[in-house]
Length: 376
Image 1 (cartoon, rainbow, N blue to C red):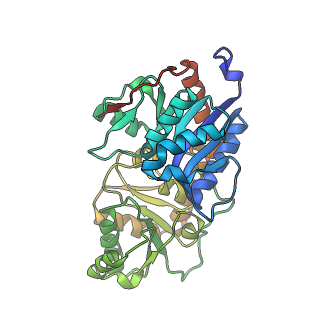
Image 2 (image 1 turned 135 degrees about the horizontal axis):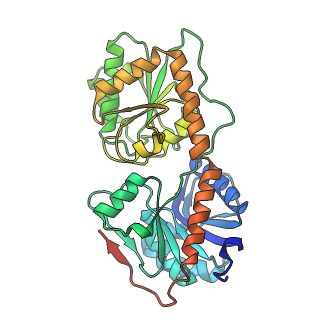
Image 3 (image 1 turned 120 degrees about the horizontal axis):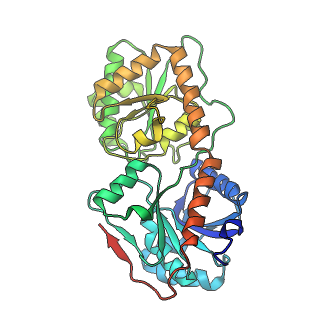
């Protein structure tokens, strides 16, 4: 395709990621593909793993050999030789863990690529890019953009903000219930780390106030013995349910009155947005990333931001909302409206389409393979 008149030209993009689950993740990806297609951006998704229960979409290609590190070079050559997709104008790498795969594909298709940094990299992490082919590094919030610029030295001109897209449920999954209902407060465990201890300590304080409440910790999977011992140490085991959901989604939201995300480190976790999309008020740590996702430009939050690592503050916010049904319902409505306004699939597609076209406007990738470079 020519660069002249690029805004009017249809684009072909190949998204590359390690895994697509059966829950909200795949549903939002498919919805995003539809929204992008309406904007003249035609996307296929290449993944190494897809959940068995995932609905079938012909635009999603599962190539299992990519999941085996030592087989990846052969798998990539075979995938390209089989011509499973049309040659893309642009590759979009959705996670740092699959950067090598995406860069290799970009070199073989001789096209540029963009790289999403989905969350705050670990302290010891590095970001690997092919400087002559990488056109943009995409982030969800300005907080994360600042982190990449200050800690990793990423050129500000290379960073772009792309809105994360969330599919809102047709109806509120957590309606205000009649009096006598025992309230349920939940959290999504993956990536929470020490935040689970804060959640359990806050649960103890809520119960000590004489409030009859239930608590749900979802997504731990595997061996729950340590988590159960910790709940027992805080004396809340009888009030805590460990829900072994493989994907965050409607099964969780349908049972909750409040969602808590007491992260102890900066994060742009997706779970709070999903809870808000279901009309559930969110109480989250006031940390970089979450603050950018949840707070309105005027600083208002459809829930509450509490100091990180502070179970007393978390418990106080839980109690305040549990004791005021009207405020809780209003916050749930505001949460849903914020997602519909700022994080809808349409808004996400619009921001991604702009990034894609700007990336291609910078010209084609170098024809010769370029050594990858670490930014750290």
